Amino acid sequence: MAILLGCIADDFTGGTDLAGMLVKAGMRTVQMIGVPREPVGDGIDAVVVALKSRTSPAGEAVEESLAALRWLREAGCRQFYFKYCSTFDSTPKGNIGPVAEALMRALGADFTIACPAFPVNGRTIYKGHLFVGDILLSDSGMKNHPLTPMTDANLVRFLQTQIEGKAGLVDHAVVSKGADAIRERFARLKAEGCNFAVPDAITNDDLMAIGEACADMPLVTAGSGIALGLPQNFRKLGLLPENLAADALPPTGGLRAVIAGSCSIATQGQVAVMREKHPAFNIDPLELARGRDMAGEALAWAKGKVEKAPVLFYATAAPEAVKAAQARLGAEKAGHLVENALAAIAQGLIAQGVGQMIVAGGETAGAVVKALGVTGLRIGPEIDPGVPWTTAITGNADETPLALALKSGNFGAPDFFLKAWDRLGNG
Image (cartoon, rainbow, N blue to C red; front, top):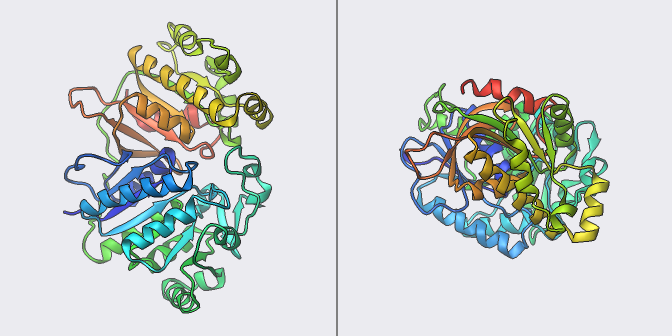
């Protein structure tokens, strides 16, 4: 059977988040790291191509995304999905708007949605404004993000700064009436010259209705939440059977470790909780800049510890510490130093026998999977909303499967690092 849904994610952990949602909805899903060179094989309902384009220059992000779209079209996908963060991480110049418009032009589409809502993780949209929990996005910790500070919670207004077309609102009073009412509002917006609709969404029922209303759209752009509402459309067409084992993974084993590069508030809390119970090693970007081999030190430190219990390696720090390092080194250099060090630690841990690894932070996850030669991920059971376990696809069928959990910085409960192993259920 042909692949039903082809997805393009603007970072690695966001891609895993989306893939996990699709698996929960009964779609057998693989995530590919970068644009694939080969077919993904049989027995797959959805493919997520994960890029590292969220903070790239807009032109590069567009070029990469179009390359992913070409591969997905050649794979025979019936519908396409551009996935970005549930906090709409971007700047007034992009990259969400420019990428979405480029994909629309390539597909000959004249209308789509922009809906980062993910209520189960506290991301809701009301009157076009994005909320994080009970506060506006612009009042949340995202206002201090070092690369994509979000200072305007009005998605209609903010998206308008990024696009050549026009954006309009689908108010919750319409969304609450269901898919038919939403489609009618889409038609009115198109008649008014809009190319993008920003639908309010405060519950999963809203996402289901929005997803149903998008059944005939060539392209959907959203966070991972809309993934709840799209699989039902394929079932209605008889293209997707019920599949209660879509999250099945092969058995894995080996030692356990956590690598945290994200400096989000959620990851800061998770690091603090794990440090209370497990050995932890801190990676300091200023020491890396001085030439100190912190990766080597970390791996030497790990010997004798990782055999006994999960260990943690973290560059996670409070915003003021991050800003201080960036002020001295530059944001790009500081980021690259940390990513390279954590990726080297990941490689060394595999050599020490680690077979089950959690990685926190999109940029860190991208660096780690590249260093490990991972070309794709088979998506398995969910740990917390938006974060599943996976097994790595490396092209070497003789290797024991490596279990990876790639966690977006903003996701997960405070005890995420501690409870994740029980959800994997083996090893």
